[in-house]
Amino acid sequence: MVGYYNTLPFLFGLEKSNQFNLILDIPSKCIEYYINGEADIALVPVATLLERNDYKIISKYCIGCSGEVGTVCVFSNSPISEVTKIYLDQDSRTSQKLVEVLCKRHWFINPKLEECNVRNINSSDLNPDEGVLMIGDKVFSADKSFNYSYDLGAEWNTHSGLPFTFAVWIAREDVNDDVIATLNLEIGKGVNNMEKVLKQNKSLATKIKLDEYFKKYIDYRFDTEKQKALQLFFDYNQHEMPIP
Image 1 (tube, rainbow, N blue to C red):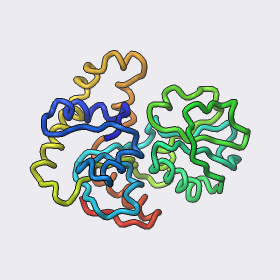
Image 2: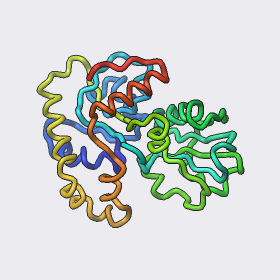
Image 3: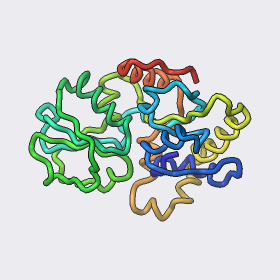
């Protein structure tokens, strides 16, 4: 599973459980553990599923948002309508694909897209017609001197009227229902007890506004609206979503 701040509620229960061995990594690596057989269950960026059918979506929880997400943003020094090149964070294919969708269907621009390590890019490194996609914890420390910031959760919501689903839990077909039920139970211990999660991460909460982040930006329930949003994202990329 992803090792970002947004999975701390998942970790709250899972790291105390003796039912699961945890591997924490960046989003783009999580699907690799699944493909290589190192993991039978994985929290994966939804775009990594576009070319796969060897999985089932198993959990009633996800990494999603119902508007602003806070940690998936395109930064630039000019309005997005004037951007001709966007550097893409290499950590998540979903955010990359979402940028492609928004460029084509929402912003109506056709910039050159280039994947790279964006961690050390700040506003002075960009030409006036360039932008940069950043995801995850690095957004909290992104250079505040960028003139423009476009939150992809909010932009998707404006375009579609729907929330967005960034990552879902998947498993192999032979993972039984008891294991899935246990996973949901352990995840729910954190998602349904945010105050305990915040208390456990009190030292981190002094650095960033974890309370606001969990309650305002991240929406963990893989409900009907998020399933609709995921299907629309798959439709835009011509992929059929397995029924959860």
